[in-house]
Length: 139
Image 1 (cartoon, helix red, strand yellow):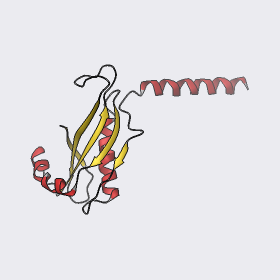
Image 2: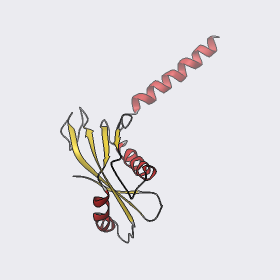
Image 3: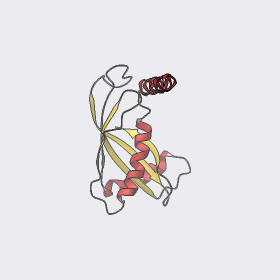
Image 4: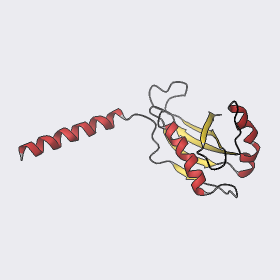
């Protein structure tokens, strides 16, 4: 019985330490706005949003609040821009999202601390039904 308690205590402490080390970007409560699209399905958008979340998780202390699909017109207009972003690229599809995020309270780097940033854009592209590639983000 004592051995089980010690083992449980050790596992609990390890989990607690791991949680404390996890100070990357928080994407746990992000609101998604899929908008209207005749080009992309929700599944297409979800796979692109997953790439955004993966990147955002590397942003220490920031919190992703919302991600919104811009629109089909923007996706079509930005395809040539996406192809310019990568040498030799021949993307056939582009998708653009805007987001709102909250900057870290401390060690905010280039951002003002403890502030919401709106209109942050994310550009992704792919060829056919390949995986989305996150090409650039910012204003």
